[in-house]
Length: 402
Image 1 (cartoon, rainbow, N blue to C red):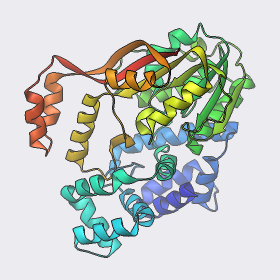
Image 2 (image 1 turned 45 degrees about the horizontal axis):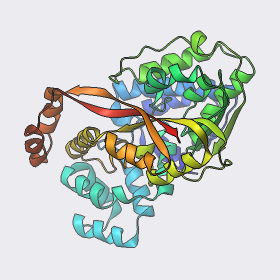
Image 3 (image 1 turned 90 degrees about the horizontal axis):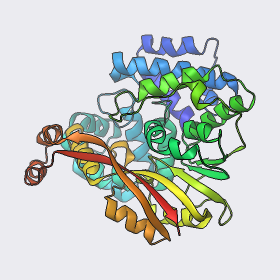
């Protein structure tokens, strides 16, 4: 299991004072790595209470001692060698040989050191190897990425754009890529929710919170919302979190969880009245196959609520990747869309556009300041030739099945 392997590595690699912090969270554990891996695979009340403490501690560590924190896709961090080793083990023999020839070294430890110290080698690696991971490898890595934050990232856009419509909805809703289950919990106040995610750690988190809702144990939810709000506080979306009492005041309706990929939905045809899919499509291998599945399981006149990064979000991503020299595409974003391409893709599968709203804006000056730092100088020149007042990094869209 990848989580056990990761914790075995991490607890051996961190400084003693950092290890002590994690030991204090799990007092009396005879096998610390196994105990941590176990709690992330559970969905009971004790597990969710532990996870809140864990994520508060890891958040503080990221702020105060980032080199020792659990971070993905970051060099000069204690976790970096683990991810290099993971990639070394799963890459094809041809890619392994390609890396050996590029680094001019055949020893993995020395290759890891070179990658950590050489931004150009990391950028080459991302383009030639890191961007070619299989869907299953992405699912596996997501188990570790889920350790970084309690939240899934789509909570703000859900509250600002989807929540107003969901309150008037009845019937059955699919939460496609439900993550830690924030949207699932809120939507279950109004409709029966079917939630699916390929990340087992996040799915267990969502199931634990849902179980607590069913039992009427709501004292923990203000802490959950406070933690999510703290984690997402830097996102430039104008939306204030309602209180837990406001969001979760009613009795939860039926919630059903499934571990799986949204490009092969295990539901009958014309089953759902609505689909919520936020911050998901860009992480998948085949968005077209997913939209085809949405069309199959959605009733006529049913609606899909979706967010996706724009081409400017793609540019910002590539700039960040080049500056930092990431091993993987930033945030594991594999796709980006503009309003036309997104609408055309949905139209090919029997949907009509209801609305598209750009959001997550950045001023042109801020955007160009980042572009100027990119090693890809030609990119800054290209952008400077077509200035705008501001650029939207993301899109929110609603499509209706015809």
